[in-house]
View 1 (cartoon, each protein chain N blue to C red):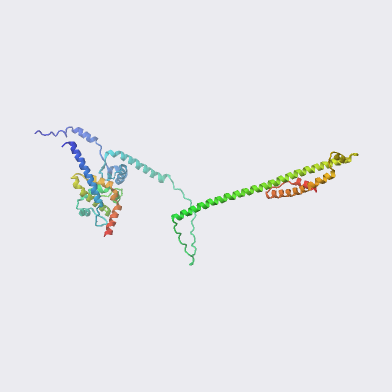
View 2 (view 1 turned 180 degrees about the vertical axis):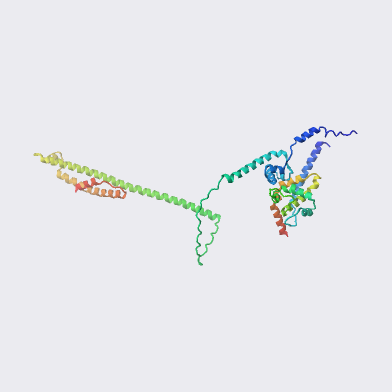
Length: 264
Length: 147
């Protein structure tokens, strides 16, 4: 029986040596932790968190395939340390404004007979809901009442304004008619005076010829018509003046008063 | 026997082992163990209690128990922040090591001599919620009530 040659395993020792040299070596926990300036458990915790595998703690060494993890952890540590460095040096403490001292409330003496306030009993959910509902309804009602009051006020204002406007219009109309009548009378009187001065001039004849009544009668009729109108006019003017005062405005009534005096 | 059939048989065996492991893990979880109480448990005392060697205990602690976060957080550290070597265990850590030892004893025969440490570590890493400190407290309170 031919022996198996054992040259297969030791066929090319140079190649084996080269392979062994090329094979990456696993990382020792202690060395890696020292390089990263951290403790072994901390490094293991970080590796376990990255790999999501807590069996990392049972590993003798860190496999070379996870070398990239070490770089990532180194970056994380550097970032954390830089944040820590930034904290106390670059940010000076913000001076806090001094608050006034809080005075303690003086204890109020309690008499023996004073009743201690009973703590409020808890409301059930149902009662609380009912109270909330009632509050909402009352709020709505309050709003409705406010709106109704505003409407009433607006109607009152409109009524008052209509009255005032009517009084003013009546007063204007009456004054206008009165002034016109007065002017007509004055003109007529002037015309009569002028014609009386001339001899052989009978104005009444002209008037009669024109089919008119006597001047005296005309004047009398006119005065009869004018007097009650003037009385009403005076009342209306007084009311207008009163309203204007109550509204805070003043009227220039000198001309009207002058006119009124002229009738006396 | 061809290579393909061997591979398929191996796969089937592996799946069976995993299934059995899960069932056994459930058993270990459900098992309520009454442990003696001490403030600190030295490694020697634990070895005596469990009947295991110091090396085995070291493996249980450094390869399996350490993957549990609550266990890790209770390991004393030196000034540099590294875990202290040869530290003694508190009651929760002792409870966890006992659970590991029971589980290892159950699974050891099924794996027929192959390495099981990494598998157990994987199981404990994925089931940390079952061996957390809260679970230990709950377990302890049950026993204290029973006592």
